[in-house]
Image (cartoon, rainbow, N blue to C red; front, side):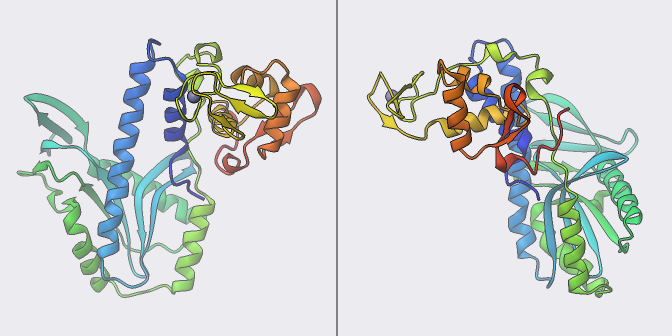
Length: 322
Ligand SMILES: [Zn+2]
């Protein structure tokens, strides 16, 4: 299964909400988050053009990440009955130059020059990994085409004498490229076989798991405590007679803690404890916090003092603690 929003992106969003803006790591977290969001927006944007291709029985998988020797991620993998296509999506704007000698891409925007890796080398490396994954799992190989797609309409591609210019596209060209390739390669596997391959790949998707607090050297103590009011956003709401009460605007609600518990699950690699929850909910009794965790549908693992609680929606994606 592949989550609609990558877990890493959800982790950054949760961290941005819980980290005080004056924390020294805040700008860095913000940049990470923005980059993630831009990348995803680009990948999502291509869906429209993939959909336009008049080719029957095409299956498109977004953000498939596999682990085989090492890990690799394919922005889009298109599975046809006679071909396969990998698209590496780039959302850069500005003027982009390809240098065939250095295999580097230079972007000039507002007179500032910036270098990037050659996306064709990137997508060819992904193909080498995918090929070896298919061989290891006895999946039939099909002719597999690889492209880099620049999805931002404000990107100006300067390909000059770049030898791979035919494999660098704008998103508008994607439907016709898929149609041409499908015409050239008639089906060699059945629709049923293709669906099986799709399911096998989805079952083998491994979400990138990061211990995000450790990665950025952020302590639990650094984060905001207290449940924010869903109406006025001030902290903390108080627990009174089985409900949450805002002392500032008077809002009352019953399940405002669900979001915060989910955020703690994201930041703890899905290992919530009653102590952690009671701290964040500003509840004096860890046992009262435990009751809220259990009633919110978390799944208990381990016994008594060492018990941890896992959010069921995150279990398929966060497998182990790194
Ligand atoms: Zn309020």
